[in-house]
Image 1 (cartoon, rainbow, N blue to C red):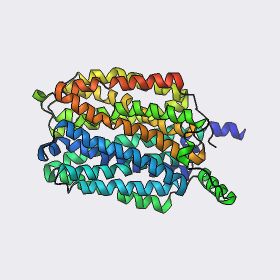
Image 2 (cartoon, rainbow, N blue to C red):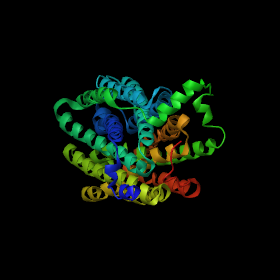
Image 3 (tube, one colour):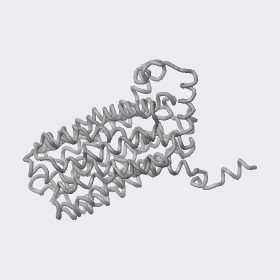
Image 4 (cartoon, helix red, strand yellow):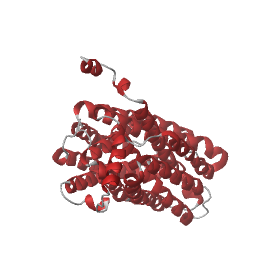
Length: 419
């Protein structure tokens, strides 16, 4: 009888205070991570003009950030498994906020490249620490929802970056935009004060200490036994998904702000900001919807739906230079072209055991990000000859390949209890 009453409760009434606290900590860190990382895209047109960069160089700097984020995700994943999820989360936020701030002092392309490289370490670390914290704190039946809500914070951060740029650029230029990036460091202090480690991690550490286990390095364990196939699948899926995302969303602000005679949409700064905010409203709905759908119909079906529709919509967006069509298509492109990220944290958590969970999540997600780091450079190079809109169409291949990988190889893990 008690079980029946429990099942009739709204899902949010089954969530504990500690679970909400973990979600807010991971979500706020992820939102501000997105804001700091995407500030570069918002000011890219101005930076290219002042520092005399072409599109290929502009894309390459974005690539550097993503490359270092891949290493950062792996590094902070191992830190999270050894020292705790919340400690890793806090340190990663401090790293990306500090180096975003320092970007504002750049006088040369080289200086900016160095700061973007170091910023990426914290960017990669935040996701893996937050994902491990959430997936181990929340129950299996609500894990997809939780990761959807956390991932949706990226859209909020992306929109915040556009708003900050729209307000700050007219007053203090692109340097002032980067200076604003120090704000997330304040969140790290809040996380340190009251966010608890997951019980499953605390239990694992206690057992390891009691038994004085001397295991092989956790990274090595990803490439042995039954875990190897999940490492390969997770990494391959991450490559396809992130190549499409970063190739598209790194360049969308520049595409909207580039003059029509140079292959862009020709929108002014305020229109570009408005279009991006509306687009990210669609992304937010996509992230949240993915989480609820994944808990309702399964991870596999939801992944296929989002990847397939992203593959169909992105080429149409690239072929549309009309401002009204871009306004209408934008939210749908962002909904399906972003929302699938909500599934990565839950699925990867359900494929790897506790002792290597954060390392496995960090490796797969950030290996994909490292390879996908080439996407902004590839799109920038292609855009030099054919324009950004046409280059976007090429990215549909990545989304289609991701759908095929899920269809053929990904097991359904909905409802799996972590161990």
